[in-house]
Image (cartoon, rainbow, N blue to C red):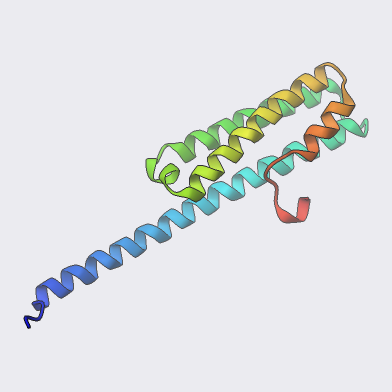
Length: 135
């Protein structure tokens, strides 16, 4: 039986260490994107709750939702910038969830324009990602 050389062992260990570091960076990136999307989901809910309660005007609410929509799209773009993020099942799921959030925010803008509180309430309940403490 032939034992691996010391150099082979070190190369293997170095490859494993780099792989583990890459995984932890990927985990960290995905976690940061998740937190950002959760924050944007909570922001959307807070804006809509303010409008539904009559504390925010339609004009202010539409402008706030437009800004939120742009931020969701920027974060989606940042997530998709690294193909590894979308190859990871967690990243792919996060991307799909963010797309749903984006579509909901766009639909809420129409609800506000049409002053359709019933539809807006239903959409708020469908927000797919928020921090646990906001649900």
